[in-house]
Image 1 (cartoon, helix red, strand yellow):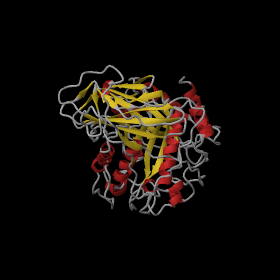
Image 2 (cartoon, rainbow, N blue to C red; image 1 turned 30 degrees about the vertical axis):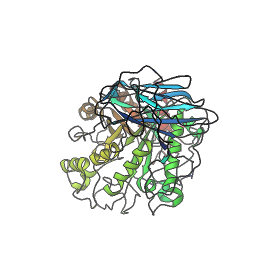
Image 3 (cartoon, rainbow, N blue to C red; image 1 turned 60 degrees about the vertical axis):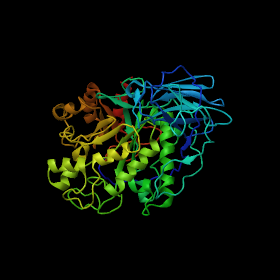
Image 4 (cartoon, helix red, strand yellow; image 1 turned 120 degrees about the vertical axis):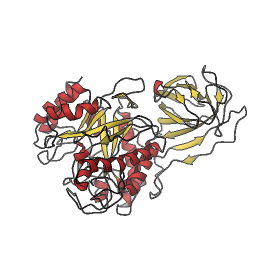
Length: 520
C-alpha cells in the first residue's frame, strides 16, 4: 500500500533463538536402502536446529556435493539418539523408523551437481535431551564435514552461530514461544510452470491477508508491531479460512541502524520477526516477507518523504541497504521454503526517470537511475543477494506503478537460477488497471507463464464492490491473493479488514471474509 498516516503501534516483543550449524561426523551405515554411489562421488552434511520451543524443533539438513560426480536420486539417512519424532517434512520425502530418519530427493531437485548444495527440512517433537545426530549417509556414502567418505569418525563437532547483520546486537538466547492450537505446518513452496506447488507437487493457491505494522512501528519508535501478534490473534485470522500472511518489513530496523531505537532494531527486531513467522507457520500459514520501507533521499515526483532513512516508500530501494538486507533475511530463513520473499513492495521508478522504458531498466538493473539521487538496488541484484546465500525460497517481484503495471514484467524478468520466481501484482479500485478488460490484456499474459500473487488488493470506499468483481476473476485464473490489511484502521481512510483483532470485520472485510468462505 502507498504511504499513509499510521496509527500508534502497540509494542509486542517476542523472543527467538538463532540456528546453530553443526558439522557432523561421518558414518558407515545407512538407515535405508539407497542408490549406489557413483565413482567420484563425495559429500558433506551440515545440520541446523532452529525454533526449539522445548517440546519440538525445526531441523534443516544441507547436503553439499564435494566430489566430481553428481549425487543423483539422492537419499539421505541419519539416526537420533533420543526420542525425536518426525511430525512433517518438506523439500524432500521424509520418513522415520525407530530412531532412523530417511529423506528421499524431491522430483524437482533429484540431482545435486558437483559443488552444489541442497537443504531439506522437517519438524520434530521430542522430550528430554535433543542431541544432534552425529552420522549421515547420502546414497550409501558416509558424509563428513570435509566432504570425503571415511570409515572412522571425525573429531567432535563444534557449533557456530548462524549469520546475522553485523550492525545488530547479539541475539537473545531466550527461546521462541511454543504456540498452542496449531492446525499443522505450513507447506514449503516452489514454482512449477505457472503454479506454486508444495513438496508433493500439489498446487497451492494463497488466500490471505497483509499484516501491517512491522514496517513503521519500529522506525517511528512506537513498537515492533501494530496490535497483538499472539496465538489468539492468529486464531482470529485462521477463522477466516486464510492460508497465508504477508508481513511488511523495514530495512533500517532489520539492519539495526542507529536511527532506530535499540529496543526495536537489530537482533530484537529480527527475533520478533522470526518468532512471528514461526507462530504463523505452526498455524499452517505460509508467510510472505516484504521489503516495504527503505533508505535513500528522494524528493522527486510522488515522493513520500524527504528523509534519507527508511521512513516511507521510495521509488526503488537503495543498493547500500537492500542488498545486505536480503542477504541477511535469506540467510535467516534459508531452508524454510514456507517463507516467500517479496523483494520490494511497490516500485514506481518510472515517475522518477520520466518514462516506462527507463523505469523498467531501473527496475531490473538498478545502479544510476535518472531522477533518483542514490544507487538503486535493481530486482536482479536483490535476487542475486538471495540466491547468493543458497536460499531457494520463492521470490516475488512487483511491477511499476506501485506494482499495478506488469506490461513489461516478462520482458524485464530477472534471471533466477532456481526458477522460483513469481510476479507480484497490487490491485485497488483507484489503480489504472482496475477492470476486467485491463486484467485480460495486461495481467493474463503474465500469469500464463509464471505464478501470480496479488500481494495487495482492496478498495478505499469501505465497501466490497470492487472485490466482488476482482476476486472471481482471480479465482478463475488460478491466481493467489492477499487483502490489505489485517489492522484496525478506519476503513474509510484506507482498506482495513477488521475493526477489532478478534476478527470482527469492517464492511470491506465482510465482503472478503464471505468470499473466502465460498472457497471451501
